[in-house]
Length: 362
Image (cartoon, rainbow, N blue to C red; front, side, top):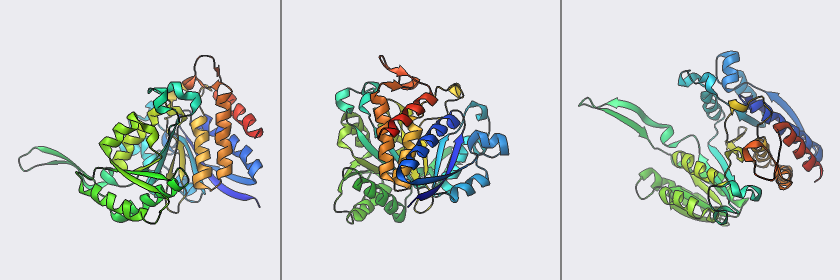
């Protein structure tokens, strides 16, 4: 029986329309192989939305997303909108999308493809085989805690305040997401906190341990965040799945990303409890190469694979797309950002065509 899904596409700015077009072609090819059917609908976000409507996230776009099975976002932002106030800049559209869809779990994989091992700044023997999933809590912690702001003390001195706060229920739900993801991987979860100093981290550790009791097949460990940062660089292959709060996850996911050597290869997912997830590449909008057929579409394609795996429960289709990416890289094809000696450089469209050929052969 054909499975039908409604997907909202948010091409955004810069190279966004180019790379999302490639991902749509790949999804269409996968649909014919796995008895899937897509209903694509497109919305405005970021700079493109500002130019059209004056708002970085029009209400019409958020409504489209809410009535979807999943959302595929490409990239937002660029120097054309840098002079706008914060609430009107393209990035505000992304924050509005996350809050509007109640997306509390950010999934950031850091997988080093063997074909790109030499691109990592670390030695091959340290990073070869790295396959980490960072699960970052996205809507709580120090970025959202109250009170926050810059205040004046009784002596007239300015004082900046941010509050790191989590409720037990916020910790419980991100722990469940991470534990269920660990079940689909190698069965190991490392929870990262600062429980030796922070009360909020003491609660974090207590709740993660309590929730983990319902997952006896998962091996749970704990690290303080400073040690976790060191271990990611010293011996990253010890990690399988990492769960942590908003601030620590922001930092650790970027450290993990650099292990792979190219941010242009990394997908991500943001998930909620019942509303559709948002799947997007980690990289930016690259306005300097927009419209020149130079963009690398692989992170967008891998984000589509994450959508299939984590958003739509279609792991077989996801695996075939991931295998197609591996096959194309094995054949020596590269876009400019991951080009190396002896490889054949392709543009965005040509890379998409090679992916379609590889997918057809499976």
